[in-house]
Length: 235
Image (cartoon, rainbow, N blue to C red; front, side, top):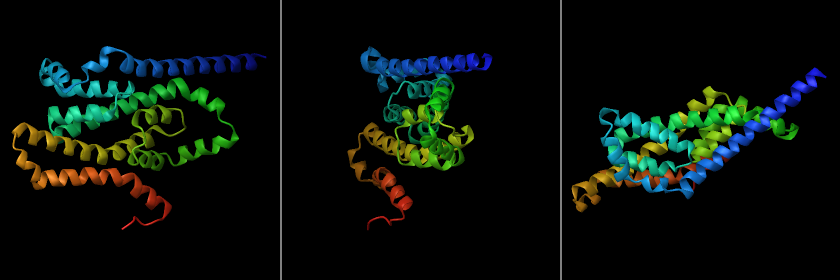
């Protein structure tokens, strides 16, 4: 009897935490979509804020990026701001670090609030997939990052699975590096051309290289899927 009571109590706690998780996600999305907060997501507004923080600007930016990840702010928006404000190279460092911090935070929110409830819903049919993610966590996370699976939903979603945190964090760190660098290098290069006012520089090797990298990045998911299926890329 005592064991049954304890089980019911645990199940109730799992449901309550799952409700809190859903409420958090809905509130986060609504905060950006339905309030004036989105009006502050501009380079000028962010630049004004960072200028008041002095040497702490990179740390503040990384904290904002991490919070933005949990609030479902598109990484492309914050990433572009990072490239414009800090340049392609330092921007990559700060954006990558902020994305990693946000990925960790969202993962633990999902794990703490939703894992128990998710585990209670998993039947035998889906348990094998959950176990497979635990065994092959690094490869699974790396693959999903490389094919540009939506970043924030995956962060929360992985917290609901049995994936080991070490596999998750390493797979994420490696998986987002390529796409993040290419995107920021592309934005940073265009920003340099715009700032110089020398539009003839659009024909420079650096611009051509950055555009080529950016276009190539769009084909990464297709290339990976072809390799995974054993089909050689189309010539």
